[in-house]
Length: 278
Ligand code: SAM
Image (cartoon, rainbow, N blue to C red; front, side, top):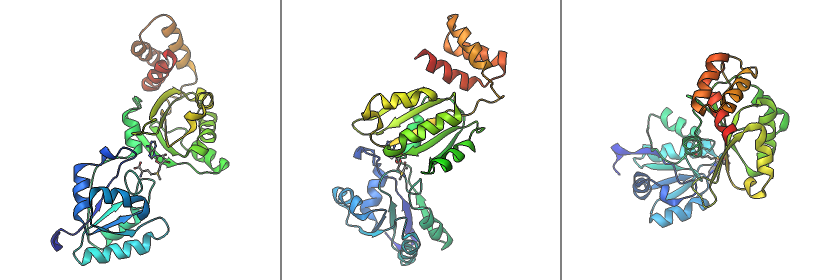
């Protein structure tokens, strides 16, 4: 790579299935002289498998400032650098943002590659029809702070997207249900891996579903909660919806009518109707 093309390439890597590495990502990882990795030992096998001759330098949460300075130096010397994290897109609940900011501040080029991201992968299969989504990432690990954080999202009409670790998933789902109540929850687990599962259910029933099988609590999770019903649904929407469904109306029509009658959000009622039907 010649000096004029020196750039920091932000390269997403697979969440689990190696075939998800894009061709462009592969090319970049083979061509750049440097790869800045969240964990150089973790990324070593991937680079080896690609036959990448790149030298690695660590860029993790605890050395981002130093790493940024080293990367800027390389770029200014005309050498391109690829930035990768352990899995998915760097900078998305992963280190990388500080490096990117420093590189941009130094006037060097940043080239982002599209590719794997657990949040977007989960959203694409969620079936939630909320027009907007809010990516939150990890909630606080302490109970009180977590409930406060969820409370602050209560009125948010967008679907809420969280990352969660297996040892906290039960606590988090308990708190989501306690604070947000009647919503739809999509539990997307082990995406792109052997035991991938995507389950949608009413939020208040999610804890029992997870507890019914220890395997459902294993692996990596994206949790997506449908957005707050607009128009301050006070339960009337749900009551009318249930009557219409009991009368045999199809899901879509029942949701539309219940929304028109009560002023509750059509999308939320539609999700609820789907959950009730299943
Ligand atoms: N940068 C990554 C991305 O673009 O998605 C996210 C990194 S973050 C440190 C790791 C979290 O992402 C996990 O705790 C989990 O919530 C989510 N995640 C990563 N891989 C996943 C997978 N295969 N299935 C479900 N969630 C996953």
